[in-house]
Image (cartoon, rainbow, N blue to C red; front, side, top):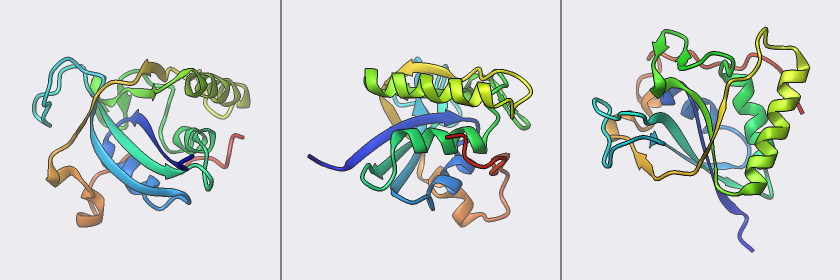
Length: 163
């Protein structure tokens, strides 16, 4: 059985999330893109309904989906609807795109843990959405903060582990 898996999440501008996840133990690849929207072949300028998401390829014998979600809830604000930092709109929603019932159940459990922690002033509004086609973003958006280290991001580690 392969230990290589993928996870799909969205939590605001994809650049900042990619930059933080790329160095996490067990993450072997990151790709930013568009997911959960209305059109095929979305672009940065036209992606109605799509979230700016990230596809994480990871080794499940090193990190788990639960640990990925734990970190996800530590690096973005999951209590704001369609907003992260200065970015507003459904493109910047907090979402977990689940591939099966197991992932959906893990996501619900982690959300409950985060809510019970009281670390955020409000309740989590992260949506659980069924997996949709992931469309990779244009090359200039991949590894953006590696190439532009002073570029904009609203993502940073806010808390220690929830789990």
